[in-house]
Length: 87
Image 1 (cartoon, rainbow, N blue to C red):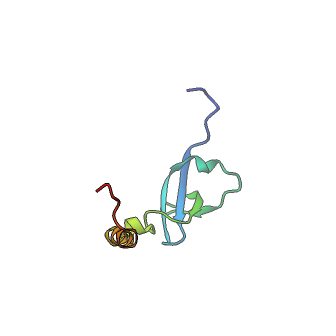
Image 2 (image 1 turned 90 degrees about the horizontal axis):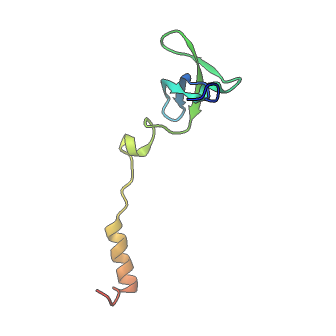
Image 3 (image 1 turned 180 degrees about the horizontal axis):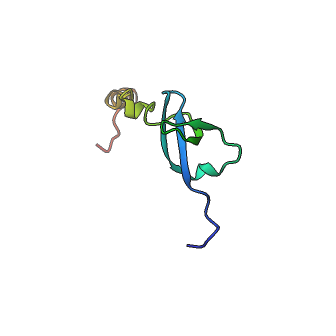
């Protein structure tokens, strides 16, 4: 790898505002200047990135995902327009 061309990579806290959860990981987003910081459980200060949605609040992961009634939609389409002559 070439030296001095890669962004800084370090610990950062991602905070999900919708769910009120946060997790510590490593990211290149630590390189932002004037980034807000948060005191973590280990007593250190880490830069924080607020996200709108994460696995803690996403409907797919929380089990609140809506299932589309595709069978009913197909039947309604066939009632309106009939089946094609090819079948």
